[in-house]
Amino acid sequence: MGNAHAQGAWTISEVERLTGLPRRDIQRCCYSGKGGLGIVDVPNSTWGRRCYGVAEMAALYVVQLERLAGKSLPEIGRKLREETGAGSPNPAAQLAVHSARLEERCETIAGQLARARALRIALREDNPQGALGSFVERCVGDQLVAALRTLIEEGSRECGQANVSAGRKTLAPDSLFGLGSALDAGWLTRELSPTAQAQERPSKKQAEIELGLAGAIDAAHNCTGVSRDFARKALSWAFDAPGIDMAVELWLGAGSFELVSQALRP
Image 1 (tube, rainbow, N blue to C red):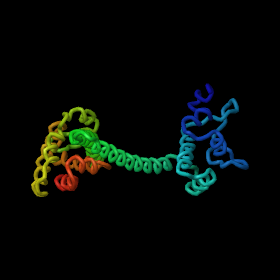
Image 2 (cartoon, helix red, strand yellow):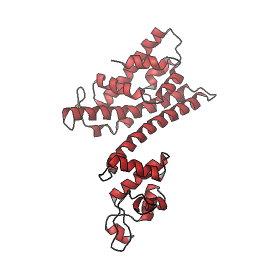
Image 3 (cartoon, rainbow, N blue to C red):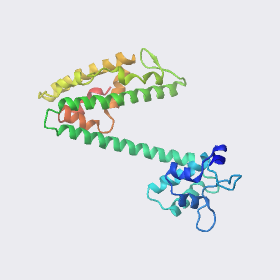
Image 4 (cartoon, rainbow, N blue to C red):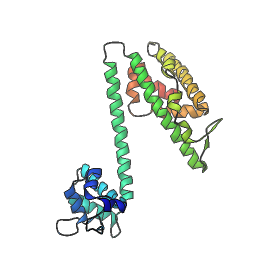
């Protein structure tokens, strides 16, 4: 083990633990003889034991991700050989594909979890409106920070600079780390809760939601210094996160999410 670490590498036991790939599968991936796949080339250490560097670790983790997707080792071997052709395996490109798929799955699961939590709150016998409002505010607040960071980073890339002007203030993405705590408790529920009990015609409820969202936009504007138009765009992005729709409907009433979406459109 010490020899592997001295070379900045890992032993097979460590690779097994870190990647989740069983030892036998690791050995088959590295063995090019009968029964092996020969898709990972691992140099031997000076002590005659194989050491696994970052490139080998990455290639083996690609194999593990393919296994978790339901493929057998022979299928994985054929797929990787077809993708690389006569060239060397490119675990970076393969990991990029898997990362994108995993991110999509994370978004799907996050939406399912948010809907399940919102429904559990709504099924409570005591008045759930306050708890639903707090839940929406917390979810939207988290998404608002992410939306602002993404919009600013996109603006930075387009402008070719580290900072971007977001209205009246020039911001760097790192300046938004404290936004979640800067938004005071009630910044959203204070503005929108009155519409939860409203039983008026849709046009009047739409006007009340627009008024409430204007107050929420002001809160984001005051905390970050971004323009109100920029804050509106970020808030629209935040409300569009998976699962928020169900929570808003349960909190503000049937049809309310569409009214919120309409109010946040440019």
